[in-house]
Length: 245
Image 1 (tube, rainbow, N blue to C red):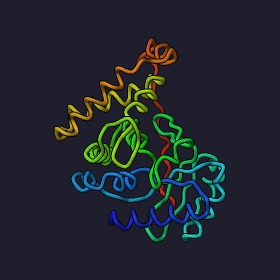
Image 2: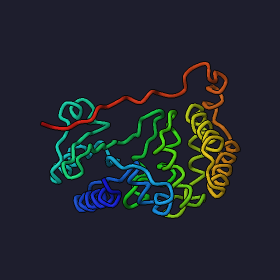
Image 3: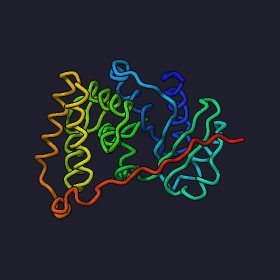
């Protein structure tokens, strides 16, 4: 599947969502390609599906929207998990479509429901970056997505089409030792094992210093005392590929 076809499909769906007053945003590789086009070209990766983020209170409207595009829902999965996640099959892309609702829950839990209004098509860059840095077992695509984001966008004090909100990231991790630990481990891994270009290395170092310098909450300090003796992340639930018929 071409990146262009994937992005056009995603943008078309979000434009229709806007017309219906549905708050829906791109997440995942498609969001990275849209926010960081130069980085996506420099660090090319495979694109196999499209992911969205929306609100659980609009779950029914989101389902109706995707069905209007010819998609078919995974009835069993959506009945069981429809308050936090929906899965559809898109015949046009011949792939699954994931819709996360209210929270992004993989190795760590992130809430985006109050942040969907910041950007027009994607979740904010800082949140998008964290969805990749929170993965304990990063894939090649995850590494390329992180590099793409940092190649195109600058570190700043707000989320925009050109900047990543470093203060937001630092404050979020200063309240969650587990999340902090995974992100810092991954930054170290990226620097030591993947030899990023200097412009990306510099940003990773600045980001890591900002994260470390941010004053930590009491909750963070209490969990830090336990340390790595107790597992600090969740194993993401494997969801098989869904194809109707």
